[in-house]
Length: 397
Image (cartoon, rainbow, N blue to C red):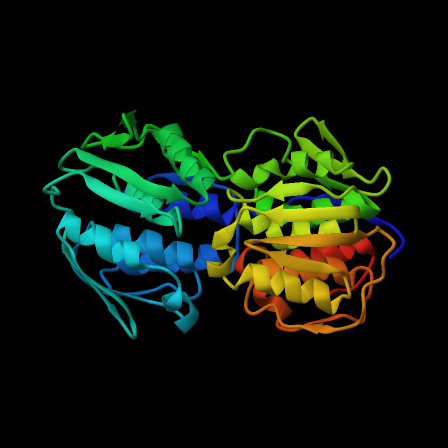
């Protein structure tokens, strides 16, 4: 590859789309504008369809967001349900569901085959709900997403430390946009009952997380123009343009579009990713092709994502012969510059789409790199290899 040149759009955000799907599951007349054929969205669509059809077995595949959101959603219904998923999904942190739902009158059991829930619909809790968000913000998001048209007022507070709080903020802002009002006073969230959407159409934003590798490639080796991504966004990962700009990339908003241009080598920086862990693997590769030292930290929950992203990112860079070291919950990377040619290796992304995308950037500079199970990118961006290859003038993976 001599120069990277890409112009196009990316799929709708799966995080945004799946939140909108939960709202639509209460109000089928709600129209969603925006398209995505990624695995997680299709799994959510199937899970909601199964619930609508009166089925009691709800398949969640590999999708942690679907599993957590649907646990709260089905508990609004009367009946017995079994949420199933892959062994890896079932091994991820889920204990907060077992703690919250019984306070709303449901019986919940973690079984080898999945999560069993028996509910009569939510019942008024005896006291204010207390929710932890130190492993994931998806539990409190799942609760609020299913708080439409309640027969009672709901009060809850979030206890202790929080991770990915920006995704919780995204949930609140999304729901406020379509009409769910939440009062916050002295740390207590209050949701009045009987609330319904005030909109009939919801526009789903394009996926900033998935656009990030394309933006990095343009910032390092040419130009990337992302159609329709120049406006304001609710997504936490929409912070990445400012991250790349701070490293030395030229970032331009032109009309509705967002443009990233290389203007000399990127510079090493310190990045704190507590709110944006999905950026970690690709940002680490960007650091590898930068000049100087970078430190990526502040994200202890990386170990509980689709893979242990801290360990896998270190493995990826080490295979590429990029000097790096784990320090606490972060990674220190010694940049080798944009002309660096990584070593040849074979990499197992461990069923993690973000790890495969990060490896794809390395492959742009050494086509002999092998990425095992490249199709895992379908979880969020089925057309990723096509678009990355188009920009580089290569056939990938």
